[in-house]
Length: 359
Image 1 (cartoon, rainbow, N blue to C red):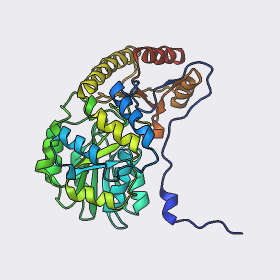
Image 2 (image 1 turned 30 degrees about the vertical axis):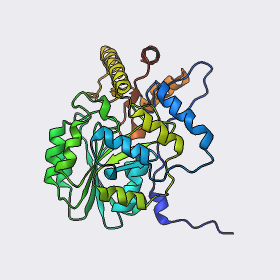
Image 3 (image 1 turned 45 degrees about the vertical axis):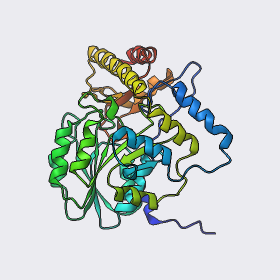
Image 4 (image 1 turned 180 degrees about the vertical axis):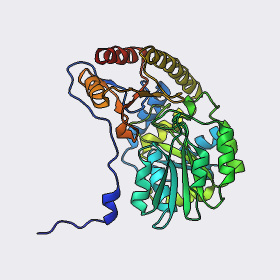
């Protein structure tokens, strides 16, 4: 008996590299997935509780309240706001809406691990451009790869996994040089953590570049990873296109309510960013004292060079002692790297102490 015959493109779609979990007798320190160590704030928990008695009803397919709150926060029309089941859903929907066999997309590498899925699922050709020696996007090299077949350019800023970022004026100049008929998605999942800009600075680019889309998430600084909510800001045509290619109830009612409340509390966002920056300075200075180089982080994680040490042995050894980080090569990096998220001071010090036992 023959098995089910699947689409040939399925073989080209990579398996998303999820963080491993390990059996450990003590408390597990999870520093692998760029989560914040803080749960939802009390007002957000109240919004979540308020949805529990109405879960027999479908969520709002238009995400009306959440889109309006995002519009109020950003100063844009709600018609220019697309909301998704995490920013990943919007990226995958953009691939469906923009790409097809014969088309091309351009992005730097290593970068966000979902990007290779876009070409694989659509049949388009991915053109990857190496990061520069500092782990940053080489925008000039990316611009040279744009052809008449290019439909989509992705820029992850700050970049995951290297934690580096480019100033807004460099992004502005780059987008201005590209043809207006292709879409540029500026993936800003970690923008709140960057000290190179105010998160609102890149909003001004939307008025100058009608082909630009900003992609943001509630998973990181807002601490709503478990609920999955992300959003895109751009032309109304982009929102309409991605909405047409995905299911109507893709963002559940609890996620919509939690995100709509969370975005109202920018004082909480600022508090979390302040604590994260303090821990960033602490972790990176401690790593430097151990002779371990890092890129210049503008995110909530560090991209650590291990030198000639065995990457697998370090990552496995940390896991066996209850500290979970990410191996660099699993994220598309060269051998001898790891990515570690900043947790609480206690969690970060445990990571450093555990690392000492292995070094």
